[in-house]
Image (cartoon, rainbow, N blue to C red; front, side, top):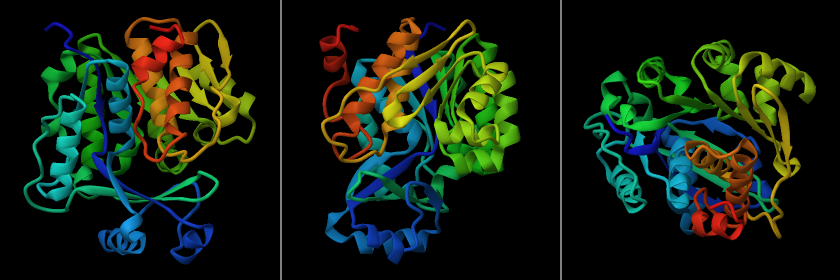
Amino acid sequence: MSETYDIIGVGNAIVDIIASVPDGFLIEHEIRKGGMTLVEQFQANDLARAFGANGRRVSGGSGANTIAGIASFGGSTAYIGKVGNDALGKFFRKDMERHQIYFETPALEEGPGTARCMIAVTPDGERSMSTYLGASTEFTTEDVDAEVIKASKILYLEGYLFDKEAAKEAFVHAAAIAHKHNKKVALTLSDSFCVERHRASFRHLIKNHVDLLFANEAELLSLYETTDFDTAINSLRQDAYAAAVTRSAKGSVVITPGEVISMPAEPVAKIVDATGAGDQYAAGFLFGYAKNRRMRDCAKLGHIAAAEVIAHYGPRPEVSYRQLAVKAGLL
C-alpha cells in the first residue's frame, strides 16, 4: 500500500474544557498544580459547574493535539481513538474533520461517555488537569485500523493510553503492525505520573519497539529514577535510537545515534497558557521527521509550534504553523 499519511496517532480521544482560575481555585478543589489527575465522571461534572461560563470547549487529548498540529504544518494525518456516541463525541469528530484529519474509529454505543479534561489555567500560565477518561479507555485491538497504519509513514503513540490493560494491548498491537510494514514508531511518555505507573513497560518499549521518543525533563528523570539530567540523558542514550527531550525555557535536547544536540527555545513575549506545549513541539518535530529533515530543523519546527501555542489559550494552533515555518525559512 502506498503511504497516504505522514503520521497516524493513537491515543485518548478527549474534549478539553479550559478556564482561567485563581490559584485559590486549585486549593479549593484539591487540584494538583501543573499535573494531570484522573477523576471520576461526577468530579468532572462538578468542575464543569465550577468553571461555569468561563469554560471553553476544544477537542483535545495529547496525541490528537499533536496530530492537529501536524495538519497545521500541512502534513497529511490520521487518528485512532475512542469517543462515546454523545454530544462531546460528536463535537470531537466534527473538529477532527474540520482539520482534515482522517478519523473513522467507531463510537462506543453503550457504556461511559466521551472523555473530558478539565484544565484550570492559573495566572502564571501553568495548567492543571483533571481528566475523566471515560470512553477513551474502552479502546481495544478491534479499533486498530491496520490498513491506515500501513498507509502511514510514522505511528505516533500516546503514553496516557497505557492506563488500561485492553488499551495497552491495542497500543502494542498497533506498534507491531507498524514495524511489520517497516514504518517508524514514535512514543510520547505523556506525564511523569504515567511513567511512574508504567516505568518497566515504557523502558521495554523504548529499547525494543520505539524509533523516536518524546519526553519532557520531569518524565525523563522519572523514567531513570534520578534527579540529575545528564545522568538521565546518558541512560537514555543506552536505550533509545533517537529522542527529543523538552526543557521548557531551556529549549530541548535531541539525541541521535551519533550526537547530542541542544536547541534553544523560541522567544515568547508572554506565556498565556502552557497547555499543549509538549504536544505541539512533537507536532513540529514529527512533521520535519516525516519529511526527512535534519534533526536540528525538526527541533526548530517543534519550538516554533510550542512558542505559538503557549501564547494563547488552548492546546491547538491559532496561527498556521506552515506560515510560521515558511517565515523561518524551514519550508
